Structure formats: C-alpha cells, structure tokens
Length: 489
Image 1 (cartoon, helix red, strand yellow):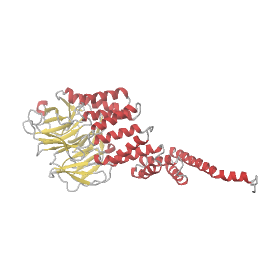
Image 2 (cartoon, helix red, strand yellow):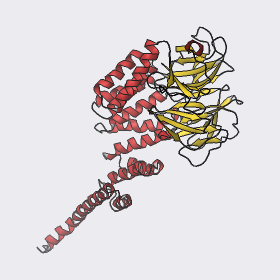
Image 3 (tube, one colour):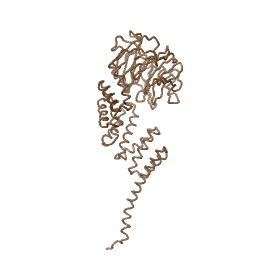
Image 4 (cartoon, helix red, strand yellow):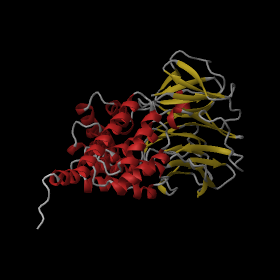
C-alpha cells in the first residue's frame, strides 16, 4: 500500500479548508456591503445605499445581512420615496425566503400596514390581519408584537367586533408598558369602550392614559375627548350664546358660508365673497388652496390639505387639476371618510356616490341626502329630509342607527341645513322648520339627543348657514348675513 507523501497531507487539508475560507470571506463581504449601505444612507446618499444593498443581495443572498438589506430597501420606498407599492416586492421576498430571520417580524408588520392602508372597507382587512397574527404566532420575543396587537385591535373595531378589539388594545398596553404603542392602545381602548356604551369605563381609561403617559400626544388628545364627553353627555348644560367669535370680531368676514374642523382643531372657513377657503389658527386667518367659485362643500383632506366641492368638481389644495364629479350637478353635501372615500350627495339623486382614493366610483343606495358629515367609526351620518330621519351609516353604507327628526325633542323640526361631527362621537345638526323653528341639536354616537336649543331662545337673528364642533365642547355658527362667527357654549 502506497503511503501518501507528507507533503500531500497539508495540501489536501488546505484544499478542504479553501471553501470554508471562501465562505468566511463572503460573509465578511456581505457585512461590509451592508455597513457601507448604512453609511451612505445615513449621509442621505440614497442611490449609493440602494445600489450597495442590491449588490449584497446579488452576491450573497444567503447571508444574515440579506434580510436586513431587504427591510431597509422596503422602508426606503415607504418613508422616503413615498411609494408603498414599490416596497411590496421586498417585503414579499422577505416573507417568503427569510421567514425565520428576526427581520421577518418587522417585514410582516410593514406588509400588514400596507395591506391595511390599501383596504377601502372593513371586509378588506383580512389579509392585513393575517400578517399581524403571524407575528404573534411566529415571533414570541419580537419587539413589534405590541404594534401587531394594536393594529389587530383597530381592524377588529373597524369590523364592528368591539369585544375582540378591546382585548387586543388591553393586551397591547398590558404586555408592553412603557412602549410607544401603550398610550395609543389606551386611547383606542377608551374609544372602543365608548362604542360599547361604557361611558364611565371610557372616561376612566382616558384618565389613566393622562396619568401614565402625561407627556404623550395621546394624553393631549385624551384631555379634549374626555372634556367634550363630560360636557355633552354628563353635565349637559343649556347652550348659551357667547356672541361673536373670536371675541370682539364683528363684520370681519366676507359672506362666510361653510365651516369645517381640521384634525388638528383649526377651523376652516369658506368665504363666498372671496371664493376662497381660509384656515383660522388662533387669531391668524390664512388663505388655503386655489379659488373655487360656487363651492358647496368644504372638507379637511388628508395631510392637512383642504378640499372644496363646486359645480365644476373637486378642487384640492394638494392637486393641480380639478377632478370632475360626473353628472352630479345639484350637490347637497359631501364627507371624506377615514378610508379615503369621498361621499357625495346630490339633491336630485336618491343615492350616494363614493369616489375612491384610486379614482374609482360606486353608488350606495340611500334616501336623498340634504347634508353629510363623517363619523369616527368610518362611515357617515346623513340627513334625509324627505323621510325626516338621520341615518348613521357604516363604511359599507348600511344604516347602523336611524333617528327620526323629532325623537327625544319636545317638538319636531322639519329639515337639516348642515351637519358636523367631532372625533369623540358627537354629531351636531343645524335644523329648521316645524314647531321647533331654527336651532341646533347635538346627538350622541347612539343617536340620543344630548343638547338642543333654538336661535329664538338665544336671541340670534342672523342667517346661520353652517356649523362646527370645537374641541372644548362648543358650537361655532356661521352667520352669513352679519359676516361673522358665533360661539355657543
């Protein structure tokens, strides 16, 4: 038997070690590519970073740094490019090829958020919920579990499953105390308790939020939500006329016709004499968007933009062109729901037309509506003067609550001129006619009458054409005849 040369043994060992050494070099290269991309990205050299991470995926897709690169590429498309659809291929690959990696949990969360954002009605949330559930099932130690529970709670609430929603919100802040999601979950838990008819529980949860996270934005939100609920639903003081608002300003507008409250609490005003919308922030009045003659509806749009509907179509502050509204020529009201759908009523059409964020349209069977307002639950409230009813509709257009015009009032009214709603569930109606005369009625989320008064009782004699609910429980009235605003408290 031939004995191998002693010189051969080291060469053989070296030949066996070469693949291992090469693998070590590749692993080192993958990390260096990833870190190089990180450096470029932090310096905002985005294209360099994207190219570097792309090279990493090409040269070593099995490296532990590959899922990190995919996650960064997806986040870039969402947060910098603002192209969520471009993030999906990266998230799909992360979900398919790297489900066992720690980054997969973050990828599933982002994918679920994108799917939820694409949903245009509650029934379309199932795919997003599946991603959030996978995080809870597959990643027991993932930091994003709290966010996944929070998003599951929101999805269950949007589908009317309030008990399931409340469970997820409670688990989110119970299991993740001190996290950024905890105060958000408390706020949503409070709102869900209110939907379930548990006002005391809602108020206790809002106070707990203010106590445990006093510096959070959610604590500020909780403060006004608690205040308006206490005023409208518990104290119910008689509405009194505080006079021109802001105090001391009289004859300072040019034919105001429409009011709306922005998400940040600012008041939006359309002045017919100037054909423009304005934002009132504190005492400063600033023009918003282009001129829009003949505006019939004023809406707070996404991202703080102002939308106006005129006979020519939808005029958006954040868009260059006017969007036509087809054959709708007798606009009687509009509302923008939390799903991004624009609900439009036409005085000659016994139906509502919905314009989706993607540019599509669909029709929802409905009585002819004289006024609309968005609801925090995702649908809208409409006034049907012919049937003398208020209808609280869900996101699919199905009536959730129906309120006859005279219910819980000493005398009925005949018509609704305008509607307004706040984020805490109250709906205000500017009403006219019948034995009631002119006045206002404030309803709760269940349709119960909370407060009401007539303008005759308040000593008002102007021409009130619109109204808005403010964050301290007051009503702002738009007096077209006297060119001013009036506050009721």
